Amino acid sequence: MVRMTINGKIIEAPEGSTILEAARRNHIYIPSLCYMSDQHPSGSCRICVVEVEGQKHLQASCMTKVSDNMVIQTNTQRVRAARKVLYELILSDHNQTCLTCNRNMTCELQALGKKLDLDEPRFEGEKSTGDMDVSVAITRDNSKCILCRRCVEACNQYQTAGIINLQNRGFDATVGPAAGLALGEVACMFCGQCTVVCPTGALTETDSVREVWAALNDPDLRVVAQVAPAVRVAIGEEFGIPTGTDVTGKLASAIKELRFDDVFDTEWAADLTVMEEGTEFLERLSAYMEGRRVQLPMITSCSPGWIKYVEHQFPDQLGHLSSCKSPHMMMGALVKEHYAKKLGIPADKLFVVSIMPCTAKKFEIKRPEMVNGGLPNVDAVLTTRELADMIRAVGIDFDLMEVSRFHTPFGEASGAADIFGVTGGVMEAALRTVYEIVTGREIPFEGLRVETLRGDGEIKEGAVTI
Image (cartoon, rainbow, N blue to C red; front, top):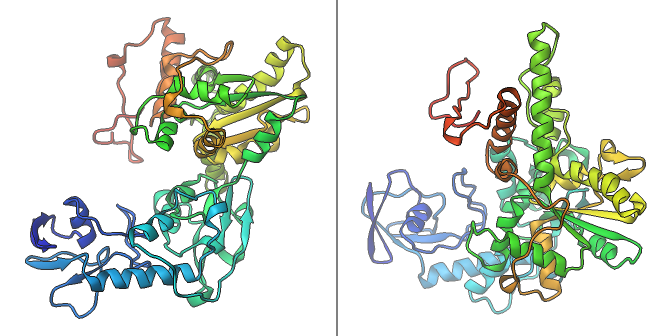
């Protein structure tokens, strides 16, 4: 451990830590824009500068390692003045249409201006490119990019896709795919992790809210919503509810308040997926045991981002993927086939909206394989954030919503569907189904032995996935 002094307070931090990490570890606030924990710091924004005794220049705290007896000041007049100038320079090349930006009030750049007590920016610089790149899943607005490179880290380090990078140099620098190509023209899997880490509105999910409002206001359409398992927890954070709180009942009520005709649970289709994938696995295994040529192991395939990644990066492995659709696409097909017949209305009068945690679902519904008889299985996808915007737009107080249930017949589900939202959950649910089909008995939770093999055939240490 290293001992140092920050703002007159003696603290300790692990050797090798940066000043910013040491400060946050000890609950000392230093503002930043480009920094992301567990990733290599770029030091591009310099907003996190501090004074270090004995150093002539201000130091970027995200890049400077701590040392014994270091004396640091994070909030002197010199530091505050430098941060304001740096912030003003960022704004001089930034699209400031904040009131019409979908990140208004949730923008880190906007919030930082308030913390820095900025009255009016002094600089009006030449604006760099304001090109718009609108794909089916993600919208990129370069006029709002501050070159923080957080999306670059997410794309290259978190997802290892390598689609978004810093292009060109100096004033011509931009962040995006190579050769000025659009996201829809490269091997982007539309996972949306770049939109999660973007501090401004430069990268967002492509808007589907207008399309859904139009459907809700069309008297000739019956609008059906289906909700993914993860949304019923994540939506609470949008309204200040503690992270991890299950707000399923409030969510069902809020969607009904938006005048959706039916509110179904995607978990119902997750159960269907489990049965289909379990059966498919048994068929492949049976064929293998009979000596027939079959591709094993079988890989579950509920994520359209994962499917697209395999298609681009490992096309020779496509045969290992399950042939099953994802749960929300199964639900969409069922609604437009079975439910339409039950209601006695044409399938084209049903408008299915999936409320999902993943931007890749927006791409998935546009795939030609997901169209049946000229009708898409699902007509629109809303992210959790988009649904929250709709709820706010009509003045619903989410926290005061009464608890209600999803509509039948697609409102019930098993515990297998519940675990779809956690790592390894799809595979565990499928294998439990396989066990029950083969033995006729349910497997006790504590009786499931879970192991994963490395490429060399050794069991991973501490492995808990199947």
